[in-house]
Image 1 (cartoon, rainbow, N blue to C red):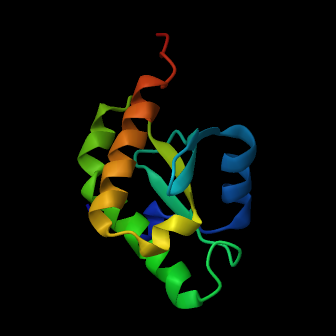
Image 2 (image 1 turned 180 degrees about the vertical axis):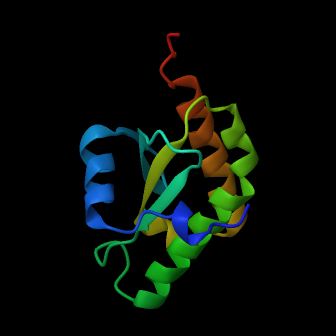
Amino acid sequence: MALFQDARLRNSADFKAVYVKGRRFEGRLMTIFILSNGLEQHRLGITASRKMARRAVDRNRAKRLIREAFRLNSAELSALKDKYDWVFNARRPIVEIKLDAVVKELQWMFTQVIHNEPEQHL
């Protein structure tokens, strides 16, 4: 799954809505906020603050790692009943970590999301 332009969260209002109304899942390398979006696809937003990494190179690497791990784990998203807006906040240790560790943590976090997904009532 390629992340097309319309599959990304772009404006601050979208990020803010996910932060305020969404659910939060903590990991060692990242924090995930999710909010059901009612659309036909998942949308992704990634933040890497200057507090997390001083150098832009490191912040960009953290975002690339998360984006690629999300793409590699996109098959697991089919287990979800709804489509969500996802906001990933990178944490400091991610800069020194290889992609496979990020993928494993994201798989673990996806299982947390799947098990905590609210039941839909028809």
